Amino acid sequence: MMYINEQDTPIQIPPDFKQTFENKFNLNIGKNEIIKMKNNNVITDRDIKIANFLFKFKFATADQIYKLLGEDKTKVNLKNRLDKLVKYRVLNKFMLSDFEEEHIVPDSLQIYCLDLGGRYLLAHYSNQDTTDWYSTVNMKTSEIISKNLVATEFYLRIKESVPEKLLYFNVEPEFRVGKKNVIPSFEMGLKINEQNRYFVGEVVREYDFPIQFREKAFKLESLLLTNAWKKYYYDAQQAPVLLLFADTDLTALEAGKLISETTEMENFRLSTDERIQHTLHETGAFLKYIKEELMLKEIKTLTFKP
Image (cartoon, rainbow, N blue to C red):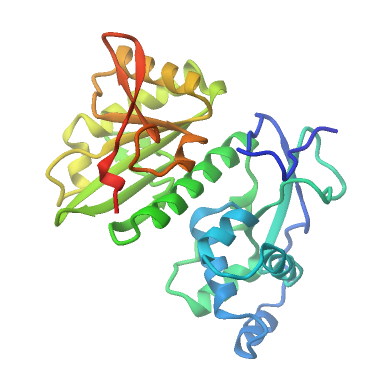
């Protein structure tokens, strides 16, 4: 059996891996019991914060939840708490392997998601609209989970770097352009020099080439290079900047070439899973594609400077 180990960093998730969940999703979770647990402080405000985060971002590792909370508590304590929430059915967790297994392997990378108990909690203790949430939201192919985790990671890096600039961050927003749906990996709004600036992000993996990414590029072009974006960003002076996150520099180069050769888009920047761990506004966290030389150049991105 091949599975993703928790020591693997940065996390490389192969295509076609299967999920093995800790708990089978079912409907016999006592709604009233869970609400009472919150009322009796067995479930805390911090637990609600975690559930809220997973409702919004779908998937996160224990490390990412640790970064989100930004607390002094140890990771071991947090992991124990997350596993307690999995027992309460507020959360669920899974590992990824080449075959679906009976049980989660202890040293595998464990990825957390919301369970039905979490939905009940948020319906009572948050202003989230949970009516459209079903447990099937969590049942995804490893390719999609991989992209979700990168979007989650970039959000956490932005929150660490420029929390005062961040207006909002949405994963998998849906845009209508004519008769088509355009669904990038995320969208983000920042306040820079008293102006609202917007970004649309797409996570690209080597296995997306050429067909999937080419199709996606055409869709993104239809949003960003026509007036379609104005419907969603009415208060912006210019179209959103496109940010592309690749698994390697080589994939980033391919993405730059494809966008330059097949679309008219010029206002885009590239990065990789590894590069977003650098200080975001310093040289090398982001790359610019130089069309004349068919190469990538490391740049400074002062947008992300505190």
